[in-house]
Amino acid sequence: MDFPFFNSIPERFQPIIDSFSERHEAIIVSAIIIALGFILSIILGRIVIRPWRRYLSKQAMMVLRKGIGYGIFVIVVMMVLQEFDVKLTAILGAAGILGIAIGFAAQTSLSNIISGIFLLCEKPFQVGDVIKVGDETGVVESIDMLSLTLRTFNNLSVRLPNETLVKGQLTNITRHPIRRFDIKLGVSYREDPERVLEVLRSVADLNPHVLVEPEPLIALTGFGESQLDFTLGVWHEKDDFIEMRNSILSAIKKRFLEENIEIPFPHRVVISNPEGTENDADHIAGT
Image (tube, rainbow, N blue to C red; front, top):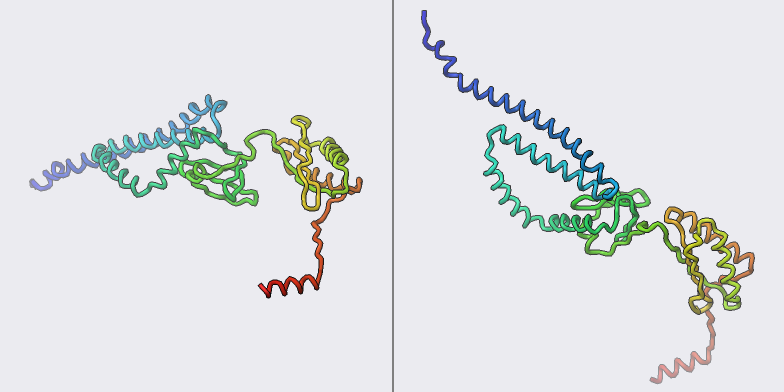
């Protein structure tokens, strides 16, 4: 017996089967494209960055690596959408309109991105430098397009917007290999200034962390209310700062005790004159 209904089943479902086959093929091809894109991003990241390691800073290498990854990601997404017959023209048009709306709504983020580009070109600091921004001081851990991550010396992670770094005052503490540490101190007026200068010179010369060149700055800088003011400026390598500071301050204290050089305390002389006070009080009352 012939059943026309069963005979027509393959013809009716043929478009569905063909469509499923095409979609199945698109999924496989898309998976291959994604895998190749991931592998390509790793290979290109190594091939492109390796020759420039001598010329680029860690900051520039980090941004370049992220740029390569983002670029390959966009290309892979576009190729996958084409496999599923998605019209890119409509998506790009919608993305353009959406981008304008987001641009007006996210002006601060755009300002941070532009500031990040300026920081990348100007290079006021690099990853690993110790910088001071406002009240925050720490080591630069990462530099992104929107912000900078700073690790403070008490192991806190601080995020600073790039716009803040461009507009505010920034101090790079470890940019140069050597630094000068200035010590301001005072001694009694009874002391001989030449003798104090000689002792300070001896302390600087005997300290192993103090550089011979440039020479230390040793000077009598002024006359205070109850002391002679001196400045001792010693040069040191940036990695020896803690050891140098602790050792030279201890050495100054020890040598001053050995040489009987007095570091005075602030003195105030109060004169009590009751009669004068009464007269002043009467004078003020009379006025």
